[in-house]
Every structure is written in C-alpha cells, then in structure tokens.
Image (cartoon, rainbow, N blue to C red):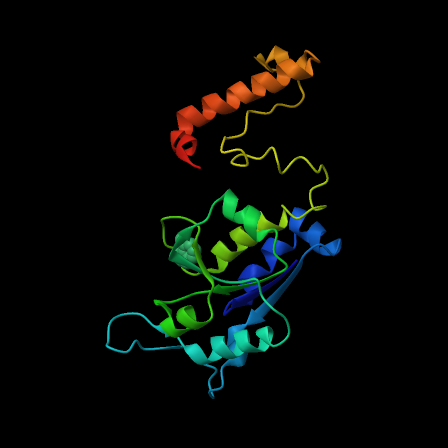
Length: 226
Ligand code: ADE
C-alpha cells in the first residue's frame, strides 16, 4: 500500500511513522508513506497557502491552487482509490472503515488547517471526508496519523502474529477481554486462575464472557451496530 499525505506541517507527521509497527511495515516494504509539503506548490512569491474568506468572517481559508496542483501532480503518476480529507465534519472513523481502507492500494490524505479549505477542493477532488471524533483538533495532521496507523497495522504481514489484529477490540463489535502477564502474584494481586488452567476451550469462553461484560458496561451502543 502507498499513502501520500498532503500537509503544510510535514514535520508533525514524521515522528509517528518512525517507530514500532509502522516503522517495521515500511522497512518490510508493506507500506510506503510519502509526505508532501503543500507550501512547495504555492505559486506566489511568499509561498502563501491561505487567504481571507470571501464574504468576510474570522479565520483564514486554505487556498485552492497549491492543494490542487499537488493533487494533480500525484494523480498524474498513479490512480488513487480514495482521496481523503480529515475534517471534524466528516463521517466518524471506526474499525470497519479502517478495515476497508486497509484493502486499498493507493490512498491520498489531505490535512486541513485554519478555518477550512476552499470548498472547491472538497467538491472536485475529495472522495471521502473523515473525522476521528466529535472534537476539534488544531489541524488534520494528528487525525491523519491516527487513520494511517490504524490502516497500516492491518496490512497482511505487518503484525507478527497473523491473528492478533483479528482479536482487537471492535473487530467483532466487542471490546477486548483483560490480559495479564507475569508475575502470577503481585503483592497479593493475582491473575484469574482460569488463565493458568491450560484448558483452551475454557479460556476462550472466559475471554468471550469478559468481552461481553466489558462491552455491556462500557459501550452498550456497540451491540446496536450492524
Ligand atoms: N481536524 C480537526 N479536527 C478533526 C477531527 N476531529 N477529525 C479529523 N480531522 C480534524
């Protein structure tokens, strides 16, 4: 999979992909992540990327020209399955959407800023608008990092244990059960004995019951999802 990210702050997106699982996915050649600095496409003297809104009002708006030129250049090199804009007024992201995006080959992601981006970009280039939750970030970079992380870890071969993404919370519309590791007894705090029983069937049943219990208590809304 190839992901192209368009941003005016590429530095904000360097660190998140230089560690752990995403770093390994890149090293194994399973994911390519390319950052593009929108400012480099601005055709004006001061490399401005924003301007005042038509009709007045507060806040600046990201201009169409630098973004359109950057998108056009990338599109001339390959076909994109989705061109995503991260924005608080988009469809709310979830595991089903991560699963779908992880099946694609080429994704472009545009990070917004200021008051917004010129609507003509959204109307003419963007295929999907995604929010990571009902709160407002200072820009789309962190949202893009979250979405990218959730997609790349799902790519076949990225996680060492092929089954471990399948047992994540949300993959079956349930939260994950609790997990424990050594020591068995930490200052009197003990691990549930069933996990030491060696009986795989009983352990699976226990985990499933714990998942149900936890979901019922914390996220009963998940039972209503399709
Ligand atoms: N940009 C600002 N806030 C955002 C959010 N909640 N989701 C996605 N992009 C955003």
